[in-house]
Image (cartoon, rainbow, N blue to C red; front, side, top):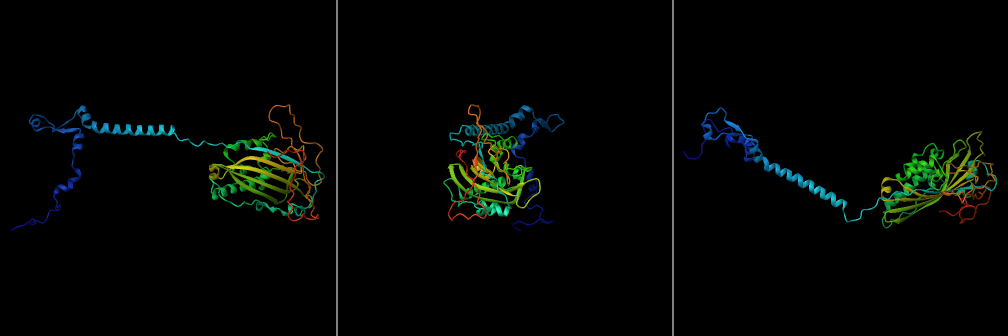
Length: 382
């Protein structure tokens, strides 16, 4: 009978041979060389001994395994050397690295506007019907964006982000009732560049008429023990414009007039006991790309006109409105000593233009609205 035939008891369980089940246990040459035990040779086994294997001396083990160890050490050394070279090249890069720009301190100018006579009073509705306030919008609606068009280095979305941050700042610093009464400051502070927050904190805790630390340069603030809002619907009118000031800097300038209906905080609240208080805020903001990404801004300059106030009123920490029926005192602005050392005080004051009565004929169409006007005692804007 030719050919292969099956065994009488059937095929084996492992047709490929029994050695396959031990295939995973094959000892290669590297395993044998790394072993710490070695079998005696045939000649050595002929002698008298009780053990079949012997332990290799440490010197021989180091010779056998030294090749792998030396390769591992060499690899570690090469990796460390490559890392050191990369760090060195990074520090010694021939390409100029962009300098980190720090925000500049805010420069402020606050000008009180004194009335020529007694402050007119009335109900908020009647006062708001007067010119030019009757043409103002209410609250946030008075803060509108200009048309957005990309610049050389800033996209439409980046410019829109800058305008949105400016709007948030104006709303929080001019319209938020809690900020107006001085009870909170965080909504304004969290929008500022971190480099300006120390100056902001000092301006609110220790205001000074030094051109840098007037709290009223950052926000609109009244003394809640003296005045309160007679109408929460604040009237607003103004403009916002932007321009690219440098390759990495976007400038935004806002110019808004805010008109508040106020009344005394204590005593009976008469319906006709309100009066208007006007604040014009011209603010110059600056953004870099990090500011745009983090929804924050840098306030570079703030030019503020606010009245009716007396010229002698200290309006650096809080605005000091004259209410219905009150007149400005006869004292002028604080005296300035040109012989004194240190930073000179502002010592500015202006005259508040009279607001038309609701019964006065309206201005002709096309005539510009008359906001607060600075008198001859004030200086030009910075």
